[in-house]
Length: 162
Image (cartoon, rainbow, N blue to C red):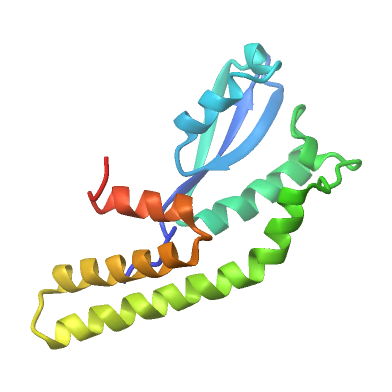
């Protein structure tokens, strides 16, 4: 069974024409992510991008944080010694909900596995049982109200929405 968000992600680096490292980021889709960077005042300096792919988002995120700390890209505020995580309602809310969200994700994996096994026991094919398990996890997460973006993306990947 696949674990949600268990898909490749890239650490990307944006460089100026003279080779100056401008920015380090990570994303499942660097092309899409770089579209949002085009609104940054430094974007006209970008000449090219490199990508380093990792098997999962967590691995890419760790590599990104290590690279930011070591390589000191010109426009990564997060890597600067003076950077402090903003104290905003959104950040405080994410911190408060992080543990609960992780527990709910783990429960959704258990719900998915239980539904998958039940359908296999009823004689369903492996693919059919996997899909039923994924749908069970989606329904579980949707009911929590905490995973709207993830639920939408999972439905899209299963071909339930466009």
